[in-house]
Image (cartoon, rainbow, N blue to C red; front, side):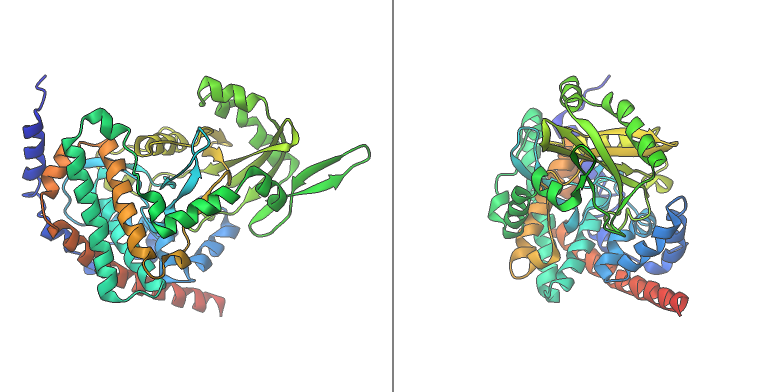
Length: 437
């Protein structure tokens, strides 16, 4: 077998410019759409809890950015209609500012990284960057930034991606695999997310999500009823969820299996989360270790097929979509949730992870002033690390080259796609208004 030299790998990337030039990455033509956005959203809602589908649409109708969060199937189809480099990497699949956040690493340290991988799949690396470019544009508009400033922010994001990838191409491969982005705490939105994560302890979740129930002989805790976001389940549903913990346990490393065995399940609830995930089944399990002051919360989240599967000829539906998400997350993240695993309930695939354990999100209000630009630079570096860990930095750097031509092209694409997203959002609002009247 021929072992490609570094020079050959870099040349492979450079050759992909003939397939799609860097300046061509700015192109977006909504007239080329073969299926309407509303039809794509309708297809993606099949199999979801019917009563929650309308809630999802209502959340999407709140703002263009809210629409964007729930419209991955639309963007997947749009990206598939464009020429691409064919340089494959593990995609986050839903790269936007709300899908980065702080969480606790296995050793207890707080880290900041991409933290949503529901759509993860291997595909053209630039698809993640184009989604992030559009997301930063929409987030900038929502947080009060002006057009020229937003464009410069997107350029800085992609320029940091390309600069980091060029650096990775010069590093030993093992150093790339364990590379840590050191400047995270200096970005104000990241700092704010880390502070939120510091406060989001299991004890805080215990007080927020559960209540004391007094019985005949003792007192215990159970989940609160906080409809529509948190609701109690039937005994049959609870039994099905708890029985799924057995197969899940086998997906963990032996030391994590032992740790989990020290906790006993106490209660189960149904939870509504996110925007794009609304309508999918999502359960949380409250467990206790050494008494009520040692809580553990697990989220058991239904995973559907990635929205990108129909558009990637080499992709096959995953044997288990929970496993797909876990493997994609581990491929891109330096450190992952120690309780990350998968299971099945009633023939449906589920991801399992900790719920709210030292997790801190990015909110749009964190992006005012210089916050958007600071976060954009971090986004670029984190995506670069994720792609470098799962692809070949030399091939990627060969395509990207020097200068900011690629970054400027994606800023143009981001603005055009954000404009179209606002039109799609308005169309959804009109439909919902008609149906409500």
